[in-house]
Length: 446
Image (cartoon, rainbow, N blue to C red; front, side):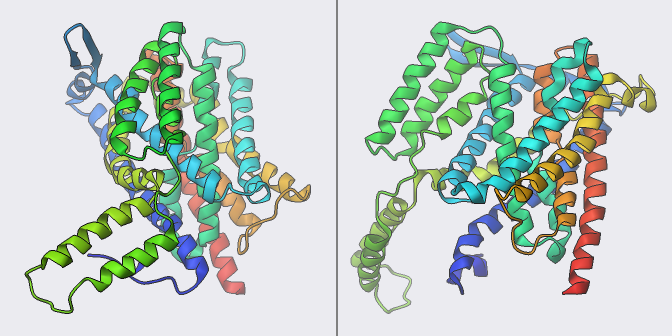
C-alpha cells in the first residue's frame, strides 16, 4: 500500500526536496537494525558448538563461467569481491547524485560535511599509525577511517524527533564523503600487483561506457553487460574488483530523456483518454494510454535515480546483511577478551574509531565554521555535532571490508574484527546517550 508520502503532493516546496532524503534515511535505519542482528548471529554462531560449520561455509568453493573462462573462489570472496561490488556501485550512484543535486552541490553547502569527513579520516588513521608504528600491523591504518552509514542512521532513528532531519542529512553527507575517501584508499593503497593488460581492457570498457552515456543510451541492459565486463577486468587487474562498481556508477546517465514540462503536458493528455467508468474491463484506448504513460514515466526518470531506487533495498536488506554474517564472526574462546583488546591492532582501531573520530569530526567541523568556510545547519547545536562525531566511530561494514584487505593472516584479522566490534559498540552507545541528552535539552528550551 502506498504511503501518504507516495500519493500526496508536497505541502511546501522544501517537502518535495526532503522526501527522497527522508526515504533514504528510513531505509538505511531499517538496514542498520538488520545488520545488528546479522552481526550478533555471526558472533554467536562462531562461538557455538557449530562454529566449524560457520567457518567451513564461507570456505566452500563456488565456480562460475564456461569453457576456458572459469572463476573459482571461496564463497567468502564471492561475497567480498562480487556482492560488495554492487554495494560500491550504489555508493558511487549516491556520491554522483549528491554532487549533482544533493548536499554537495555548492562548495559552501558541502564544506561542513567535507571538512568533518576529512577530520574523521585523518585523525583516526594517525592515531592507529601512532600505536602500531614500527610494527607489521601498520598496514591496517585505513580501517578506522570508515563509517557505517546504515548503523549510524539506525541509531539516529531510535532518537525520533530528538534528532532533527538536518542532523540526519549532515550525517548522511558526511558518511557518503567518508565512503568516497575509503574507496580512494582502497584503490591506491590496497592494490595488489598490477596487470597492465587487464587494466588496459578496463580502460577500453570505461571508454565504451562513457561514449554510451554521451550518445544518450539509457537502457539498463547496456550498462549491466559492460559493467560485468568491467568488473571482470578489474578482478584480473590487481586493483580491487569492488572499485569497478564506483567507476561504473560515474558513467550512469543523470539526464532525463523526457523533460518534466513535456511529461506533465503529455501525461495530462493521456489521462484525458481514460474513461470515467470504474468497470474492470479496460478499453483499447485506455490500455494504450496506460502503456504510453508507463513509457513516458520511465523517460522522465533518470537512469541514475532508477538504478539507485531499484538497488537500494537489495543492498540494504540482502547484500550488507550477508556481508555482515560472513565477516563479523570472531572466535573469542582462544584468547582472553582483555588480552585481545590490548593487542596493538585492536587498540589502534579502538583509539582510531572511538577517540579519533570524535576529535577529528568535531574539531574540523569547528574549524570550517570558525574560518567562515561553512555554517552549522539550522536547528543543530554543537552538542549534536559532537554526538554525530561519536556515531561516525561505528565503522563496522566498511571497516571490516578494509580489515580483510589489510590482514591476510587469520589471527591478525580476528584482532582487527575484535577492535572494530568493540569500538563500534562503544561509539553507538555513547553517541546515542549524548544525542538523547542534547535532544532533550533542545526540546526543553524550545
